[in-house]
Length: 210
Image 1 (cartoon, one colour):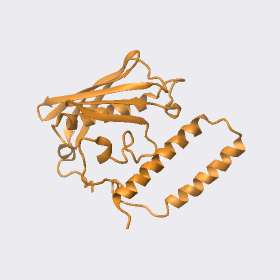
Image 2 (spheres, helix red, strand yellow; image 1 turned 135 degrees about the vertical axis):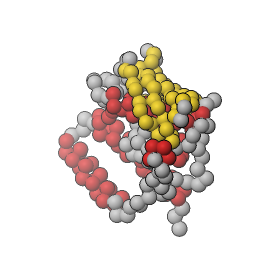
Image 3 (cartoon, helix red, strand yellow; image 1 turned 30 degrees about the vertical axis):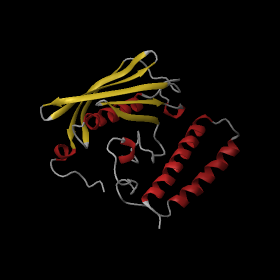
Image 4 (cartoon, one colour; image 1 turned 45 degrees about the vertical axis):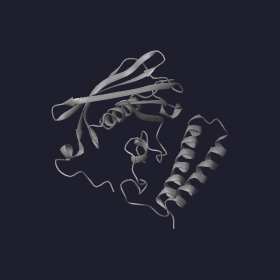
């Protein structure tokens, strides 16, 4: 019988391979005939994978026990940090002394202006950072971004490592978070957010995660 751990390991491997494929697709200069052949192969592979699906919100890829201190483990298909998400960017985050810290390297498939990342991608990074800050501070599990304000100060270069940071503090019934996304040239994106509990946002019980 296949275990959740076995499924998760296999999907993580698949997701990683697809990310490499997506990066290659964004840069390939091979003959168009080869591209069409690869596309046909990918469609065949897609049909094989779609032969059986899982309707659990996390595709039943959460493994027990869930470690709240490792964000990627309890959010397996998260579009920013999920190890089982085939479309996510190269992002690693962790908790350190009550703060969120991490790194990212955005490949060519995330290009907006030539040579730089699309602003929407860095906004997604920002949203993920602030949403994790309550867990880092030990203040709340299941924090959700209620509002987010960003200030773009410098463009984020493609293919260069960037640093991620975030923190939050209590603010009445909410949490006030702040974040930075930095390059070697300094802070590129910074901002603030209001974080609330899932229960408050949904005004009752949140959707069942499992």
